[in-house]
Structures are given as structure tokens and as C-alpha cells.
Image (cartoon, rainbow, N blue to C red; front, side):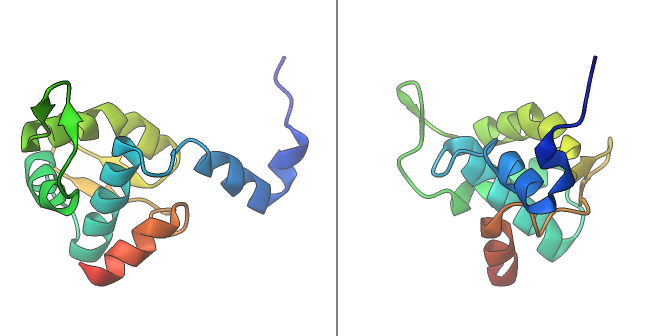
Amino acid sequence: MLRPTKAAGDELEVVRRLRTWFTPREFSTFVIERAVALVVARGPLNTRELAAEVFPMLGRGWRHGNDPITVADVEQELYRLAHQLAAVDMLATSWRAWTAGPSARSLLPGVALFADVV
């Protein structure tokens, strides 16, 4: 049986709990913040374009095993995160492009920062 938690009645607590899904300074969080910011700032982008734009924003040092991260790795990470981002209304995907969702600017503080810069 499902029942609402006490936190469900408090919007700030809901946002706090959703933010715990995104570990600070982790590769997936870096990709998410930059991808959502780009879509917010520039409008819809397809996955390949979005990955190519996010890749140089990540900086150096990211590795996949012994190999440096590539644009293809970023593209795969976006595909892997698509359902999670849709679930929290940050991004919506269609077969054509990624678009900003209703909570794109509000869930992760880094998104609003990057969206103002790009």
C-alpha cells in the first residue's frame, strides 16, 4: 500500500530530497547541469549536438576506465539519464530533441548559473 510521506506536504523538503539524487562533483551531475543549462539557454538540441556542446564544458581529467572521456561517452550518459531527468521534469526528450522541462531552472542551482553564462 502506498501512502504519502510527511515530506510530500512540504515543497522545500520535496526539492531537498530530489536534489539528493544528484551527487555533487560526480560525472553524471556535471553532465546534467551543463546539458540542462544549454537547453534552457539555447532551446531544443538533439542528443549528438547536446553531447558535443557539453563535452568541452566538463574540463579535463574525466576518465572511463583508463581512457579519457569522449563525446560518445557524454552522449551515452545523456541517454542513460534521460528517464531520470524526465521524471523530475528537468528535461523532456523526443525522438528529435531535448527540451527544457518545468523544473529545469529550479531543481539544481548549477543549472541556473550555467544557463546565465552560456
